[in-house]
Image (cartoon, rainbow, N blue to C red; front, side, top):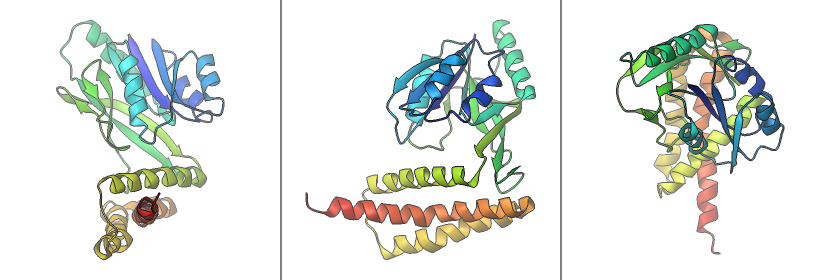
Amino acid sequence: MISVVLATHNEEKNLKRCLDSVKSWADEIIIVDGESTDKTVALAKQLGAKVISTTNKSNFHINKQMAMDKAQGELVLQLDADEVVDEELATFIQATYQQIKDKQTLPSAWWIKRKNYFFGRFLRKGGQYPDPVIRLYQKGKASLPQKDVHEQMTVDGEVGWADGHLLHYSNPHFSDYLRKFNTYTSFSAEKVLAENKRPSLGMAFSYYFWKPIVTFLTLYIRHKGFVDGTAGFLFAFCSGLHFPVTYIKFCESYEQNQRPT
């Protein structure tokens, strides 16, 4: 059995495109939904998915792991709702499952290359390709640490490379990017606050100047983000902007915590 698992929250715009790319060969589709207020749950059920409802968590990897734990298939593919499996990857997954049924010796999990869509194009540079992620694994051989929203799975055994790509439509419009930018910077600020750090001049210099400049130059110059034109510049610039916004949110939360109750 091949299992496809997802965690969702208000993904009605993306979900059908995602599930259409896997439903012809997935034996089960499991979705853990975190309090969606749109038509995500109804659409998921209409498309044949089993839906498990839970709370929406700032670290959505907790819900991803919940979906992974429910999978019954020998081969499991973990997706985000804004991802699409291309034909080459679909063929690889089905061939790999046949090899599992034939008792062949295989890796425990596989890296999958991603093409990231941003500002009207798939980025080729700026550290955004091949953007490998571990998403395909044999049941029981991989898990998420659930400590960060950009973490990779930990794997018990060898990790191979899959053919094909995930097409990642994370930011079809710049407004989508800004919405996720707000979510990620808030989560990063929560992590800094949880480390019991205090605002300081040195920390402000790092988050306002050093980290943004190094990030921009790394993505735009070292990783040749300029090849992607305006999209490459915007991605590098906004990636650097993540740090001062995180620091502002951290300072705001810190001050709120210092006020007497």
